[in-house]
Image (cartoon, rainbow, N blue to C red; front, top):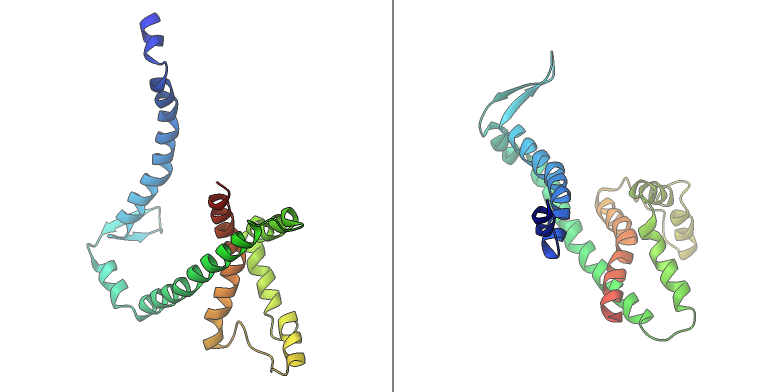
Amino acid sequence: MKNFLFYFTGKRAGRAFLIPCVLILLTLTIFPFLFSLGLTFGKVSLTGGLAIRFIGLKNWSRLFADERFWNALSNTLFIVAIAVPLEYVLGLALALALNTKIRGRTVFRVVFLVPMMLTPIAVGYMWRMLFNISRGPVNHILPGLGLPPVGWLTTTGVVLYSIIITDIWPWTPFVFLILFAGLQS
């Protein structure tokens, strides 16, 4: 017994305590990934229980032949190509500005982190209300600036930019936090 306990000291003890966490993590990530990947090679029927029939690469060929897939992929790449650099630039600007000694910088740090603390569903609902074509405050401000109301969520050319704005608002604080921590260290 004494030799057994001696084995779990120092670095070995740390590794031994990590084993259950690693097993749980692998179980919760690797198994669902492999199961989902396996489902892509089959036809799933839910009538009378779960029945999976192997069909090979038919699902993949149908996916790559589908115009909606390519449209969704191009929209996603467009949003990422614009939103991520903007989030980085804005986060860096905020981090650099708050890295200096200005009055009230602690308050600014807290205020800038608030959007990151909100749940994504709350952010989505908030921006949906802000972008509402008839009752949204954004469209009530535009006529005062001499601009017509915009269909933020209904006009084809504007929707992607609305999504980008909605994405930038909660993720810029995260970039700010990472870059600010780097500047502070």
